[in-house]
Image (tube, rainbow, N blue to C red; front, side, top):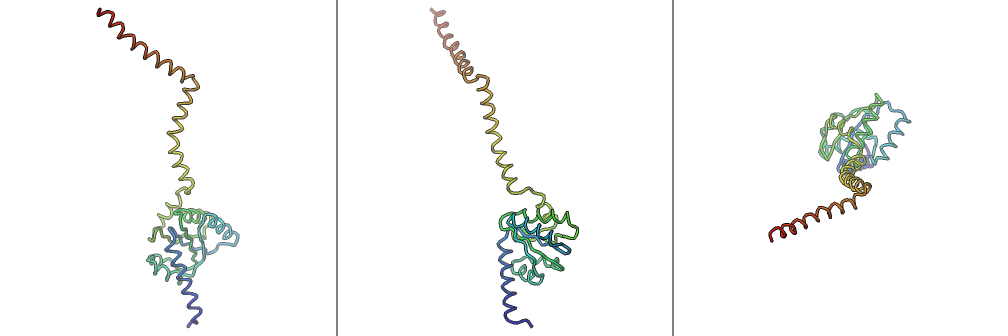
Length: 191
């Protein structure tokens, strides 16, 4: 039987994992069996730059944590080597980085994942991995907002380039002048 201090340490780890699972919007479990140190270092660096927390976890401790937060459906994949990648604010970063790494490395495998407190399928993880980054999505939205304004600005510039402002004012005066003369001519014919 483990000592009291060992039990307390394990309980603290389970509590920390539970809080991490609750506080994240997205998480992915992977099997890292066969990964070498160089590849692991590159992967961890890329995940860290994307604000994704990545740690190797013991399956028994993660089972307890998933039970506490209602993610027990992932228990079936908690065998062998397991690492957990979680993101507190980006729904796609962990899936995108880990799926790309898994494509390049046959020994690296995505086991399961969750999003907003619910276990998701491997197909859903794959779909999330294909989405562009948040920055790219924001740039696309901004471009869509700017397109009408940019078109309007180009049209105005084309008018100005052709001397259109003066031409437009002259055309308006010419159109207004005949309209004023017409009533005067009608008045003369009635006398």
